[in-house]
Amino acid sequence: MQVKKYSGELVPFDPHSLRQSLFRSGATEAQVEQVYQAIQAKLYDGISTRELYDMAFDSLKEHKGAHAARYALKKALQELGPEGFYFERWIAKLFADDGYQTMTSQTIKGRAITHEIDVIALQGDELLAIECKFRNDADAKISVTTPMYFLSRVNDIKGLPYNFFGSEKKLSDGWLVTNAHLTLDSKTFGSYYKLNLLAWDYPAEKNIKQRVDNKGLYPITCLSTLSTMDKATLLKNECILVQDLIHMPKFLDHLQADGGKRKRILQEATELLHTPVEMV
Image (cartoon, rainbow, N blue to C red; front, top):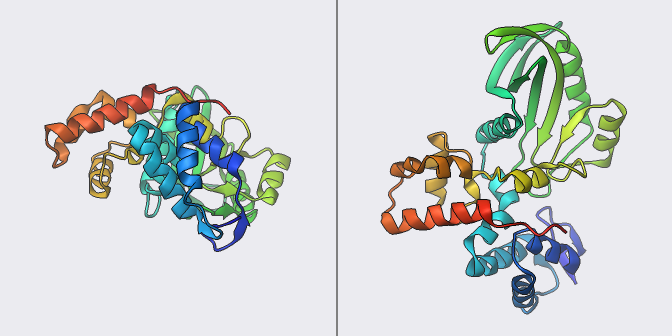
């Protein structure tokens, strides 16, 4: 049986991959088997990855909203658009969780040209320029031209002094971060030139998916109890992480939500951060 990707490409159906993704949602072995059997009964040759995702999401949600929320992480990142404005803020939160001071949307002068930097991060003497490449296509891949261009930007600013967070530091390095995948050439180029690359599934250890699951840094767009309008409203009011909502429930005051809905949102948020993930 074949599955049609977003791009229209047909690929063989991989039951093992589907089961792995279900386990990573935090579902138990028994729940994974129930969901898999429910999906298997509806499969047909040429089914789209979108329809497959929707079936898995709906089935997981019947068991626990937190499972569906975690399963929806990749789609949730795509909802930090449409141009990636909130994706940059979410990436700043990831680096802040590692102890960096961060700020977004800064303009700096390089040796040759002026650069718009998506995220600036500082920890000790380490000053980083982070470039975010946002994609809202589930199958998107970052071609080698992007890290090649990124390397030239880093070379233009690396070693120059800049004043951020009240002190002057030399720009020590850069990071290229994307919610998409990297082509093999991109990985090879990045490895050869020792570029810092972070993507959905790269590097093999500490990629975006793993970092989020390990630290609970889920974007607010994961929550299945929120409508599209709810998500947009919370993002607009700087509620970027599910953690933000847990720490400040008053963010819900911006929504048209009665007591029952507020309770369901907070329950799903709490379960998402406290449900263990099966490591597969």
